[in-house]
Image (cartoon, rainbow, N blue to C red; front, top):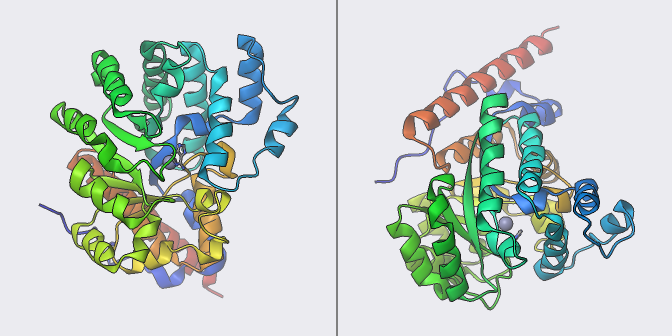
Length: 365
Ligand code: ADE
Ligand code: ZN
């Protein structure tokens, strides 16, 4: 069943790409982003603009005051502010505007495919209709395809701090809009809310032909990754950085090529790692896991996907071949048809071949 990982075109001369050109290489390479919460792309300026448009009172006086509150100590300290920020979203146009801003930013980072998380319960609990949320986001995805050729799809996430009954109601409520999303995920406060709490709703989602992912092993233990795989039967693990504490789990993830959607700047900002130089991205990659690089909540964590690549490479000393591998992994892990995936990897090979050739030409005396 499992396909072998992609191999780079043998004509790519990785050795010609000097470390000085790595940021340019990383920024220009085609890539997929597979772990991004659309509510986490709300920049403070847009939060204030929407608050004014919708006459919503914010507990901050200015953009600067809001930004100053972005000093997180753990996941929960972030989530409290993140849910407050989402309170300005009321109308279909608000969801559209938020998504278009992210999609345009993704195009600038040479993202060619993005799979976007959204948290409907954050909005339906405030009286916003499911239709308003989904149709606004979906219209933005369609327009981004038409305007920029960017491929995107939506993944509906259940909030794990709420009950499974609430998640089941949410799935039921979203069912009339089934054609507008491709999968379901699980996010919010992890510790104390193990994946098995949501076994029934994931089973129902699978029966509806939805793709399955879950956050696991961000702050929670490796046991949550095991149960996301074995109980929920997810196809990708979001974060999963705690897997390096469990050698048997590492071996399984490598053997089955279970993708991990890693978010280095998020891990730094939420104190999962003390500094980026100690991030285990390279260790996971060297162990043969299908790790990918993503932004999680770019407006809150100080960077979009290219910032995650560039800063992590600078801090950990990864090289051009590993850049190719991470981008290829992002396509391998994406929920697209095999021919589309092949097309993306061919695009990646062409980009690397041409980049290496131009580097070799520049090196000529
Ligand atoms: N929701 C938004 N970002 C999240 C994260 N990093 N972990 C869990 N839930 C989230
Ligand atoms: Zn996340």
